[in-house]
Length: 634
Image: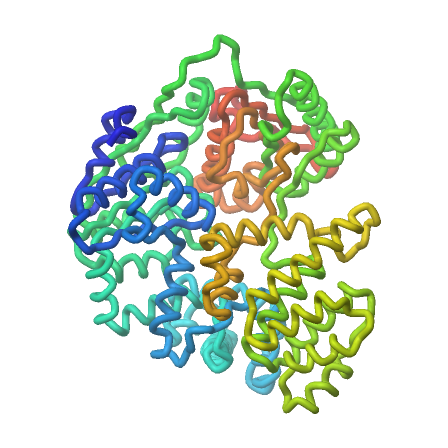
């Protein structure tokens, strides 16, 4: 294929890989996505007369959408031959088709965080006489997540807690929590994978059927997989010589808190007759940055054996692209970095070409304030799991109510969102009166309530009427068209309920595009549409004309011409917790990988900084500066 003419020898070998298990150890900026896409495109072209499909699993819908776009440019017929999706979306689809074995109907709900806490509270109340040591639903939720991602058998739960009685109570809670999910026809994010793995393990015929359909399986960003995801993979490709194409980099494992582990790469070698191809060539970073990255990461002992150092494929510019700044304290650091950055903007650099990275959000907040004082627009990314503006809260909660027709908590959420949208308070009691007259159908009651109120505009009344009649797409389009018009007319009035709407409306549109466009998205059943919404990332994109302020975790997979990495001091990067665990601990090695990931986001210049005091406490410069050779031993 034409795109392979520019490939180096390692990329070409991987792109032309045919059968059997392959591990592509691909360093940052190595062109791994182009290589993977070329390999998939070649398989589709060579198998034009065959009926097999290819499954490509990744970790974000955005990555899947971008890869799909690349692939379709190479091979348009790949649309019906390749499934490019995330682990969670794939598992959701399997459960939609086969969840009846667990008592789940296809339109099961995917819960948000607050709804999960609500269920745990109800279980704790239901079994208050037994669960005497588990009092905080929020704290228990973390334990539930751990049990789900580690596919913990019910019988083993009690052994994971030092105190025997607390362990027994956690086991009781875990079992009952899963029962309640199925009773209510809902799942949470973690139990989607947990239940799918259980289904494939208990129904080997289903696993065999999937293997017949998907002759080739590819996984991108393998280093981020946790145990339940790996178990899913093993169910799909159990044979030691299976057609499994793995792309990953053990030097970029920064999600150990979510179950990722360097041990998973070693497990691959035990489970498969694995061939490894390395992509050490780096096409992104200046040679000086590549040199720093190699010097840093060699201090980690828990790496793949015979790992090759990165090799820079870019010519040096002549000027040193690396700069280290020192400041008296964290406040001076924020102000100094902001001034340095503003000067760069005066040199015809676009704000979107610059990213400020840090280990913690707190440091980024200080930089954002300092940038604001210099009239530099910036965006601090904050992860969101649900829509927050009143209009989109109303639309999504009304859609959910349309699926179940009667749910007291959901009905209260809808009326609260409606009250915020139209500046009139609709009480739950008022809705309950209509509901009682309509045999408990709270959606129909909502329609009656809105039709009777003079505060509700005709456009919203028409929209809810369509929803009551089962036309959810007409409802969504009409309601959003009304809110668009109102937001446009009032954007200068600063109405609080619309402050997040414009950003979230663009996010809604991007989700619809990821699903496949309006025609495809709104042709889904209501249950499937809501599942797609629940799985979608609700974190807004940064405005085009702003400096990006990101945690290192948030920068994963991105690249920027100019990178600022701040807070390179002991107890910041590396963190206090990793120091407490020890110099050779897995936590310290992960902190080193965090630094490695951060500096390899760089395309042109890398500016690093540290303060001598943080929060009033004296700190020494980060050991990573010494390891990179930027400072002498401290």
